[in-house]
Amino acid sequence: MATQICPNCKVDSFNWKVDEEESPLTIWDCGNCNYRAFENESDEQNCSKCGKKTESKLKDDKKEYWWCSNCNTTEIIKTAPNNVYKK
Image (cartoon, rainbow, N blue to C red; front, side, top):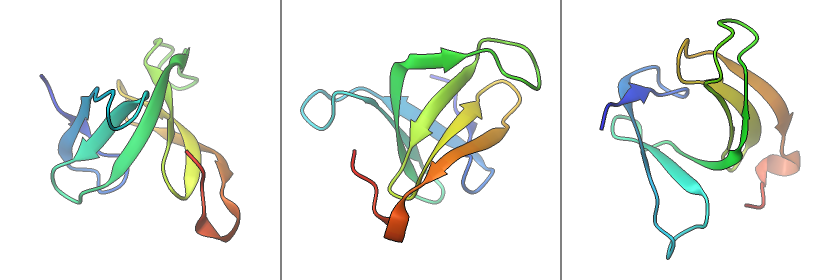
């Protein structure tokens, strides 16, 4: 599986996996900075920058944002109050 550019550290080390025992969502992990985000695959749209349908909604413990796997741009949707985000 090809790696992607991590939206956190900007290194080409971002991989996804599906582990139903851990989460019903797709799990994205960075092998470089240990960043983790979760994706609901039904939340996908065309990227406003490159126009391709490669923009996914990712959530971590601090924020929810759109991330384009084609052009590696991010757009914050919302941040969690007090840095607490319920998955």
